[in-house]
Every structure is written in C-alpha cells, then in structure tokens.
Amino acid sequence: MKRSPACLAIWALVLVPVCGLALQAAPEASRSGCIDQQDGLYVLVNDRSLEVMAQLEADGFPTEGFAKHVGHKVTVHGSTKGGGASPFFRVRRIDTISETCSPAPEPEKKP
Image (cartoon, rainbow, N blue to C red):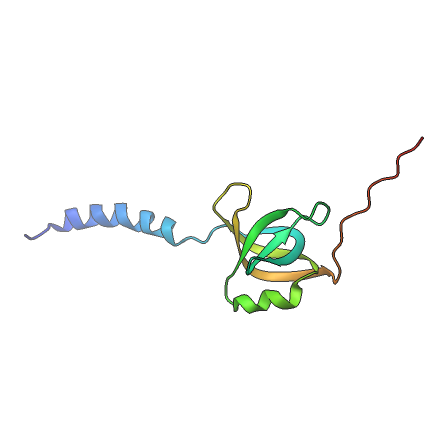
C-alpha cells in the first residue's frame, strides 16, 4: 500500500516530537549522604540516622567504583529511577564531602 506524501508528512509531525520526548535525558539531580554496602548492594544512607535513602546504580563507570567511597560522606549526581522509600539512583558523578561518615551527635538537652 502506497502512502501519499501528505500522509507521510502527518506521521512525521506526530512521531518526531513523540520520539524526541523519549530520547530526552532525565533532569540531573543530586543527593548527599554516606555510601554504604548492604547485602551486596551499594546504598546512600542519611548521614544523621544512617537510614537507606536510595540504592545506587553506576551510570558510565563500573559498579565497583562505589567501593572507594564506602564510609565517605558524598554528593551523588545523576537521576532518580523509581519511587518509594528507597528508590534507585543512577549515579553519573560522585563528589566527596568528607572521608568519614558518622551520625550527627544529638543536641544536648538543657535542664
């Protein structure tokens, strides 16, 4: 079946914008916390409560690249994938804030 040039032009007007949306990268985000390894996975934990904030996935480097940052307070840059209490975070870049990570001390209570 042959298609007329007008029909092909209409398809081009419809498909090009739709395909372009699919190719756009997710906006870059960043999160700060501490990198830890739990159950064989690398995770970002809250530096105060040490609760898991996200499971980390490497994007553009080997997963083993997280190993040198375990126990460090960092800012990870990338994109969030999924939702919920512990989403996946695809990491493109890691900036070290501190080479140590420990819970913040509780504020002293005044009598």
